[in-house]
Length: 113
Length: 114
Image (cartoon, rainbow over all chains, first blue to last red; front, side, top):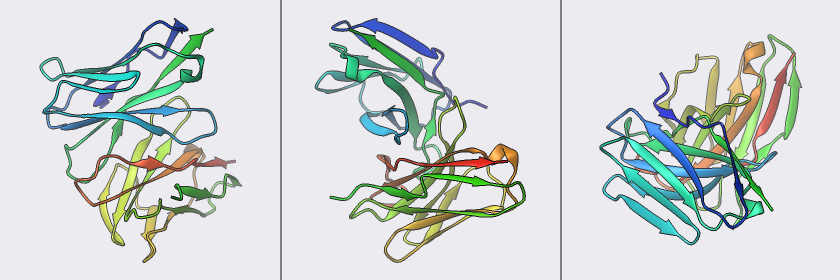
């Protein structure tokens, strides 16, 4: 049972444009959501997070939007840069009260110069 | 501030053998979580240790076990290795116990079982 889903395995955008990565979840008990970025041969790097009491959180070029009624979150990167090319994972927490993170399958973002 | 470190980087084992993977948490962090990441998938939660006690466990069999030491470093032990155990094993550290959400990952250990 995949509780967190990233339905787009890959995304390609032009440098300077907006990248939008999407994530859906099924468990309404999740109360915290995170985005991680992963380069090859490295561990995931924490990018940005959002609590379920908010619908938007912004940090520089990165903005995460949460739509609780649709059980959907998205990560916007504006403007996209070639260095943003990586695998992006969304993760959710809070349902089990253990700090366990449940990850999606990941979306590979390619930003073309 | 020292980040999360893991050893070894790569490991090749034979089916049926046992393996121990090690993790040093980020300075100041007292919680360690272990994840298994199969090729093309997201990380899957194995278990978490908080102040030397198991603080939650994912859907992994008992042959996956762990330890956390007084300095908050941790070990993941896997007995009776199976071919499907081939994966990237990630350790993540965080501050606090059950209410901690932001976890910081190490580079991982790539385990290959032949």
